[in-house]
Structures are given as C-alpha cells and as structure tokens.
Image 1 (cartoon, helix red, strand yellow):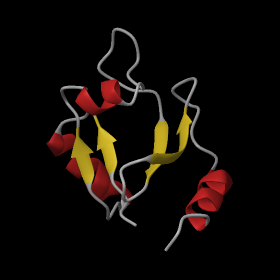
Image 2 (tube, rainbow, N blue to C red):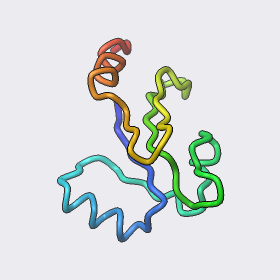
Image 3 (tube, one colour):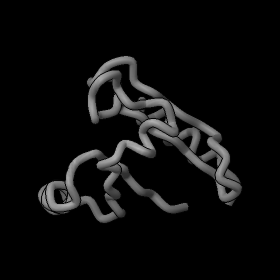
Image 4 (spheres, rainbow, N blue to C red):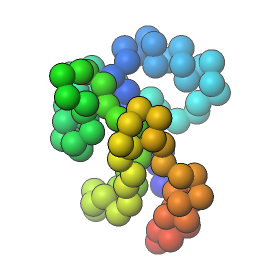
Length: 89
C-alpha cells in the first residue's frame, strides 16, 4: 500500500506543511484542480476541494471513499482503518 495526499496548495507550502506536521508520505500538488475535478470533490467556484479520502486498489479502482459534505467533514478514522484492514495483501 502507498499513501499519498493531494493538495491545491503550492509545492512549497505543501513541503512546509509536511515538515511541520511530520508527514512522511508524498504530498502532491494539484494546483490546476485536475485531480479534484476528476474525483468530483472540487468546491464550486473555488480552487479547493472538500475533504475527501479514497482507497484505490492496484487496478486503480476506488474501493472505499469518504467525501466530506463540508470543509470540516473528514473521514472517520475507524472506518478508514477497517477499510484498509479489509484490503487484500
């Protein structure tokens, strides 16, 4: 399994955020909102997305997701951990 995060923030801002929060997985830039739009999580008339978490298998199929209804609606960690535990090795 590989964890990545995608943000509309600049690469510099993302690197600073990752360093300040001890993030050790890739934090990728989506400044053009391409990924946000493709996954349907870009907020209307803004270059930002609602909080969203996707588990994508090796065949590139989304097998679990949480798309927040608001900017503060994050995935439930217990549900995410259960979904990860249910993935094949």
